[in-house]
Image 1 (cartoon, rainbow, N blue to C red):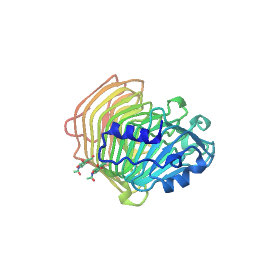
Image 2: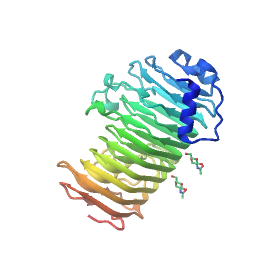
Image 3: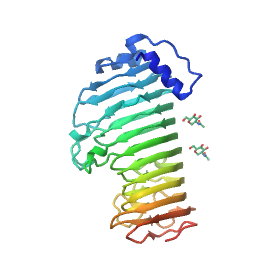
Length: 360
Ligand SMILES: *[C@@H]1O[C@H](CO)[C@@H](O)[C@H](O)[C@H]1NC(C)=O
Ligand SMILES: *[C@@H]1O[C@H](CO)[C@@H](O)[C@H](O)[C@H]1NC(C)=O
């Protein structure tokens, strides 16, 4: 298929009529080998990535010019190296990136997984995005060695992604799906099969996650307090998870603050219409004693205005409990929960702070 045809098909699929389709400058804007990347990226604004392999220990660095339209139309693999990565870095302003069906960034995790995640041999993270006013459609990530997609920046829209680390069995530790930080970020219509957080927000505001399907991991998360000193890096506000499904996972909903980490604040976090199947530990877990989980919470990151509504589903396994809430004294306030109906738990729920609208 001609590059120009591909671009016009993708544009017409999106219904973007305002974008001008100009003839593409031939093969110079199609990348078929790693050696072509830097020249094409610096000289073209319509780029097609075909199948090739990135040499071991190198980042596929897609530092795009403003307004660039990038199409991923092949299988991109990476030589094995025990390093930190990222294997792929995408940066830019007003960029659009779209994957064709069957295209994939294949992290070849089987060459790294050891069941120890970041504690084991060194493993590269797969994808790091840092972008502004940008859109990313139908991108497929396969077999991440460690964390899959770290998404940062502002005014970012992701639609139709699939992250699949299911081949790892139980060896794919720390394979977070989406790690999201920034402002005005949207992720919709996406699927994650992994073994750590499905989506996790560390800092930022105005985020919207809808129609996300999570399987095998640790749930829909907010994790704050990781920066030991800088308050701004530990502030999360106005986050919504809506119409999501979490299946065969440790937790469904998970809000955790780093005990004794940096100062911060979580406010206006909303979970609405979350369906859960076969959750193993907690359908809803909110705790301020992460990561030691020693039941001695610390309130360095207060949690204010946490709304949870319309949660339904079932649990499975001997350690299952519908809710754990473990707050430091005075560090949780103004929570409103309603319509929570989860069955099949083996252990009772436990809460040391009571939201309005729900009790054990
Ligand atoms: C938020 O980001 C979207 C792109 O996802 C953009 O269309 C919208 O204008 C942004 N909103 C604001 C208030 O900047
Ligand atoms: C909260 O974030 C959403 C985007 O997810 C935005 O549309 C809305 O305006 C924000 N609300 C406030 C109060 O800023």
